[in-house]
Length: 111
Figure 1: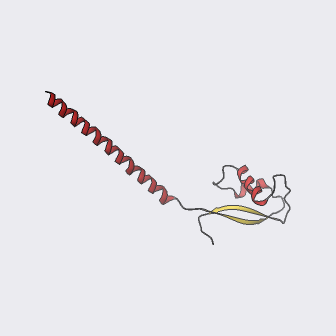
Figure 2: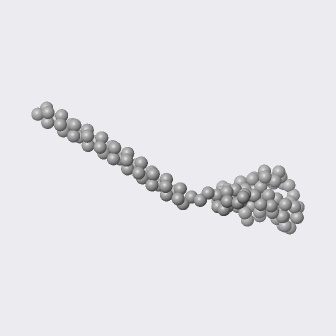
Figure 3: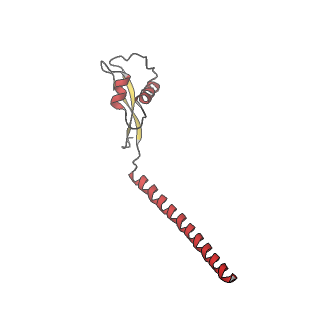
């Protein structure tokens, strides 16, 4: 009777360990597939800067709302970057005909 219980305990232990190993293998396979799926769909994006000649009526807000993209959390974040790049403050008057540097992103690598 004792040997039968020991055999059943060994079998349960082997089944438990086997199930645990299978779960670990499945987790690694699934995580590997999802990682590969993300890397195939991701395209590298590069940050560039362009010169923009100010036109009559341009404001930081209008420039930001025209040029903002998904890389910024808000228009305020874009305006803050414009101010830093151009060494101006939000109160700086924009003069028609002067140039500002505007950031933008592109998937195309430019040299």
